[in-house]
Image (cartoon, rainbow, N blue to C red; front, top):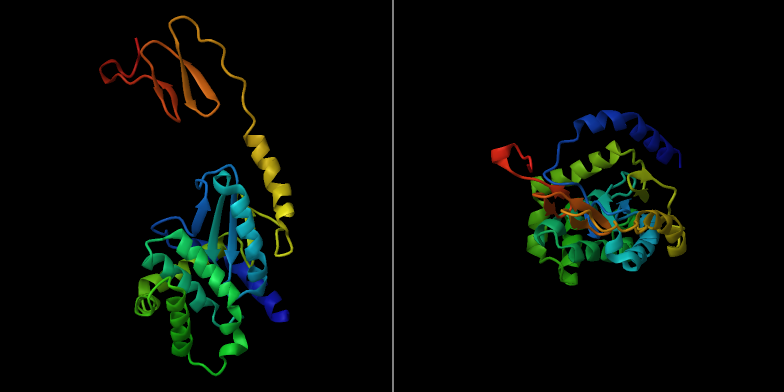
Length: 265
């Protein structure tokens, strides 16, 4: 317990330093499902595949995904903890599956599910008589058996310096967000007290009010004045366009006339 407290303290102290060292990734960190990344509700989980608390929280997170579908966006990030002996290997395995399947989200989430279900195979003392190559080979054989990625392809990914670096960058990114343990949950960028003890009802008690506040249907625009036309540019968003203006989806009424300085008249 003292070691955990010390690690958490050091992580907090160095979070600012690490954030300055995080390379800009080629794409946003993590793997998301459900609605768009800018949905009204974005849930993020920072997880360690060999963390018992993450294992306990995972089934409920899957229930949340099932319950809300495209109405929210759920994104997972890897954050291997140093006191879970093989957690970095298991975390890199998730990135290997992502790269090997062209970021197929079903495969990525299935990998996480299968590792959680069989966590005891690589958890601390279970591998104390194994070398690191033995552990990696065991994980590769397991992934091959699940049908997600062939063993040779998985091993190639585990030997990839780029994927190893990708896993490290994800860890640094989590530190830059103030993450010091797992599971850690954020809702719309704010760290919450969500934990493995939360039920689906607990999640709904937080998510539903946010969705309700954003899904109120605004009053429809009355008939547009003569010479103007109605423009429904987004769900429940209506403007009256002046003569010469065009109705642009997700933007509204705009006039594009380069010869006249973009003026309609």
